[in-house]
Amino acid sequence: MSHRAMIAGVGLIGGSIGMALREQGWHVSGVDEDEKRLAEAEKLGAIDSKGWDEEAEITFVAAPVGDIPGLVKEALLSSPKGFVTDVGSVKASIAKEIKDPRFVGGHPMAGSEQEGLAGADSVMFTDANWVLTPTEDTDDEAFKRVREVIISLGAEIVTLSPSRHDSLVAMVSHVPHLAAATLMGLAANRSEEHFAVLRLAAGGFRDMTRIAAGNPTIWPDICAENHEAITEVIDEFISALTEVRDEVNSHDNDSLLRRLETSREARVNLPTGAPRPSELIEVRVPIMDKPGELATIASLATELDVNIFDLEMTHSSEGDRGVVVLLVEKNLAERLSGGLMTRGYRPALRPLL
Image 1: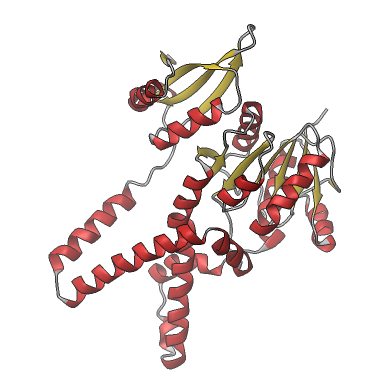
Image 2: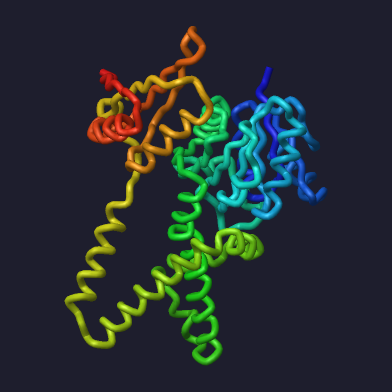
């Protein structure tokens, strides 16, 4: 018997999730406010059938941020035993409204300049970061199962609190998009006076403004829902640009060079890839079998900048205890172990080989 999943919103992300799940043998049902788009999703192989599925093990809500809470509630009612997650790029406002233990907030850091189903791709999430934002209300089994399904799509999991997520994506996603759109707008305005401007827009300019070609209709909702974090980052950006302007204007080449060298080093050292098995170690953490334990441990690992490459949870026959098994890099295991001990846990390290 095949696994069953639901997609609420069969656009770019929802369509890609449906395609990826179907390639793995899942039966995927879909709903969308646009009946033509729903029919197109079925034709393109993003879904098997239309309508809510009460037997769905997991539902992905892939709708505009403002529509997500209502669809999550509908999904929870439609699939009484299934887990529900979403793909919205703002998390705190959703977490405040949805307290159901079967819901796990999520945000895949992936996309395409193409809009809608035309850009849907089953391999979109391969090696992409996918943020999960469990809360103290989240059931551990819900978090574990949603995490497993998303990893099966090829993504790497990052666990954050909803508010921490919103603060970070303002810096790495929301403000960069607004900056790219603004710079592109400046160039477009200049082109009215100087025809050659856009013809001279070579590799660097095109790379920096590529994201400005994304679907503009989703951004007003995102900015409204995450306005505080976005405004804070914009203020920091303006301050930094003012410093750059002063350095350029005053010919302060030493300060400017230090700034550029620091930025270059940070860019070169962006994390990539996964370590070899010989570089990994097991961290076994005894826990009380109660909601939120798994989320707490995973969130702590993220705070300590320790990536979890695998995660399992076993339950004791006694019923009130369990063990969380984490796979992390050897050189970071002591950092995680120390952090866990400060939270009252008693972790044990076990080599893989």
